[in-house]
Image (tube, rainbow, N blue to C red):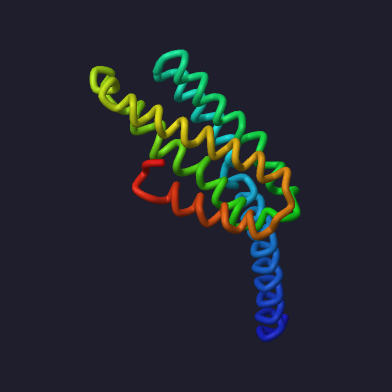
Length: 167
């Protein structure tokens, strides 16, 4: 066989092999991306619920925290389907569930030594009460169809719960 023809055949085989490898590696990358999807806010809240139960913060506080978690889980689909709820409103409520509730309200209290918790109890209960009231307000707001009121509430919640970690 002529050396030029041999080189051409080798080049064609190399290009075909490269194309096949590239094609199959793209499929694996897409599959890997799907598997590494971020957990939903609901999954995060359910995990937080387990942490609360393990922390043994008392029956009353546990029930109140679980009530907030349950309300948030119920609110997520309602907010997504509501015609006046903007993306920013949904983002803010998700942020309350994913950032404020676990990282600025519950976990700092749980991480305290049990002897120190009594001194922080009033602030913790106040934050829980504020969240309970805001969730009631959000539920009432969902029964209305006023876009401007949704936008105003979104700005209010964003400012209130993105502040220094206090409600």
